[in-house]
Image 1 (spheres, rainbow, N blue to C red):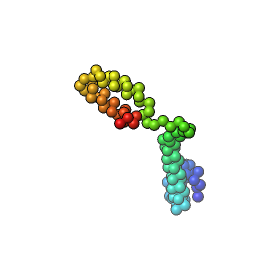
Image 2: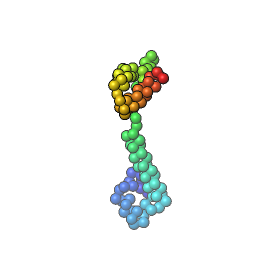
Image 3: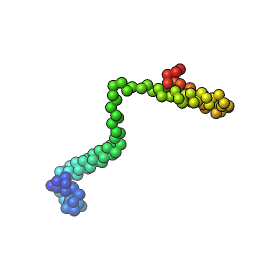
Image 4: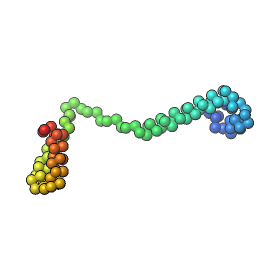
Length: 106
C-alpha cells in the first residue's frame, strides 16, 4: 500500500477514486496518520508564533519595589493639585492616590 509520503500523489488519488487499495483499512489508516501529522505540524507552527520571549535574568541586588520611582510624579501632581478645580482636581487626586499606593506611602 502507499506510504505516508505518497498520500497526496496522483496514484493515490486515482486508487482512492477507483475504490482501489487506498480505500482499504491500511489505506485509510495511512490517510488518518498523515492527517494527524499534518494537523500536529500546523499546531506547532501556530504555537511557535505565539511564544513569548524569555524574560531577562534578574541579578542579585537589583530588586526595586513596584512604584519606587514615583516620587517625582507624586510631587508634580501635588503641585498641580494646588491650583486644580472641579473634575480636574478629582482626576488628579485619584491618580495621586494610585501613585501613593504603588509607592507604599499609604
